[in-house]
Amino acid sequence: MHIVKAPFLLRSFYPEATWNRSRKEKKIYLTFDDGPIPDVTPWILDTLKDHQVKATFFCVGENVQKNPAILNRLLDEGHAVGNHTMQHLKGWDTPQDIYLQNVEACQQLINTKLFRPPYGRAKKSQLKVLREHYEIVMWDVLTGDYDPKITPEQCLKNAVKYTKNGSIIVFHDNIKSFNNVQYALPRMIERLQKKGYEFALL
Image (cartoon, rainbow, N blue to C red; front, side, top):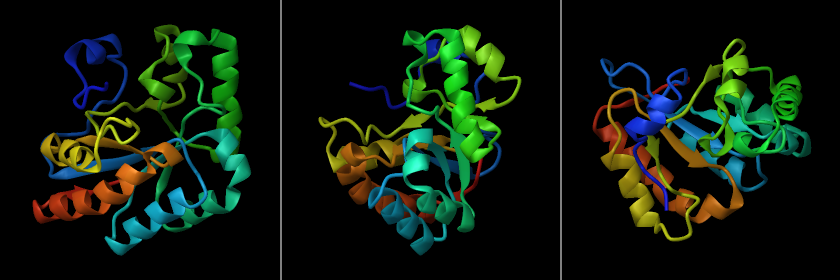
């Protein structure tokens, strides 16, 4: 079970994080977590190119090491990258020094000012240190693409229904999400473009 919209209590626990951009402009921010992954990330890049959309990819360092050509492609095509730790660590379960070292290992590979904690979970003490070097980016629309109980149709509905000016939308470029992403992503882009939204980079 996941919560599509970021609840107030979660936002209040991480007030230092960015949950959305300005609500004044009709801009939205498409993000992908966990890649780059063969077949999955290239398909997403093809789809974004077809629709002339830019996105921000929060990359796992181990996947970058395994798939450097995919990282180079997404950068060459004008997308942005963010740090998602080296090994997709859950901050709540990881000692501070190990967590920060893991973030730094990923940073050595991608060099970014953006960080998103895997699972949206990190200790406040960890984020206090990291926010000196990164913008901590959360979200306000979680599509649920990774949830096996979520149908492709529901994933699409989640993405479209809750998006508004300044929304940061989360999809995943990993294998378990791919079926939902293949259905929902192009349809979501088309519907939101028809509503007049501009897709922007974080």
